[in-house]
Amino acid sequence: MTEPAYVAVDWGTSSFRLWLIDRTGKVLAERRSDEGMLAAAQTGFPAVLQAHLAAVEAPIHLPVLVCGMAGAKTGWVEAGYVDTPAPLSSILKQAARVPGEAREIRILPGIAQRDTKAPDVMRGEETQLLGALGLDAVGEALVCMPGTHSKWVRVKGGIVERFSTFMTGELFSVISRESILSLAVAGAEEAEDVASFKAAVKAAYAAPAFAANLLFGARSRQLLFGGTPAAARETLSGTLIGVELAAGLSGTVPQAGIELIASGRLAMLYRLAFEALSVAVTPNDAEEAVRRGLSIAAAAIWTK
Image (tube, rainbow, N blue to C red; front, side, top):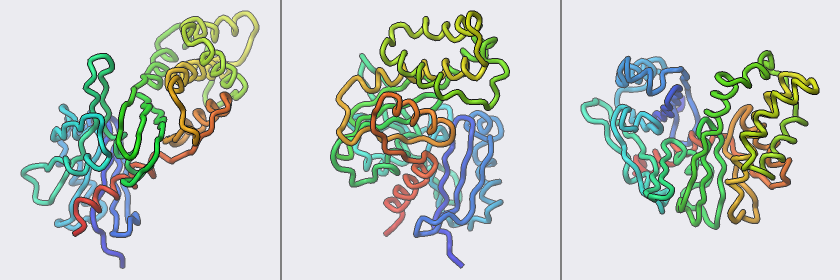
């Protein structure tokens, strides 16, 4: 039977994912729950982690490597930030040790952009970057990482030079649930309207300054010309993503196109958005990227 070498944990704001991994990077067992930072802060980080470690029968000596919001100021132990320009290799050197634990537990730091004109932070995404690009990345990459707070990252020669955060996912959630547009999208459920989505992406990309007007068009178009809740929802989604892409693609785009790190519905939507704008994309699964990044980091920290 394959022996486990370490435990990898992606501890987000609202989600928890744990993998028991051997020396080859093979996943031997995994756990998932909604015990993210917010829930764990109430229950206790050690108790949450120990319950999952017991469930996968992790030996007491096995080390644990964590990325994500467990390392935030309001998390378990603050792991701090590596400042841009940040070599991806530097996040391995600044992993914070959790004190007072029988086993070795380390938390990877985030990355900070200490620019008074464009201050920004990421925590968790740096591990996805490490997994998608590797420690020996060469050349230049422009990386799009969709999410509640989407990240656009420019990496050159394995160094994170600059990045920008867009509240695209959170804005979609708030506007579709709390604004007048909630009436237009009510009942959309899982239905899709690719044509409406692509049209909205193109319109917002072409005229991002009209974003607020384009958003309201989802309701006025429905009232005046009919249309399904799915069409309205996809118009809202496409508009917000189109505005994000207008900013993200405003600089120089590498000849190879965009490195897209995403999973599930977001991966599908962003692929459609880039397709609508005829922009080449290299897809990377977000979960595989974070797990690979944790594996790379664990090998560098604990392999002698």
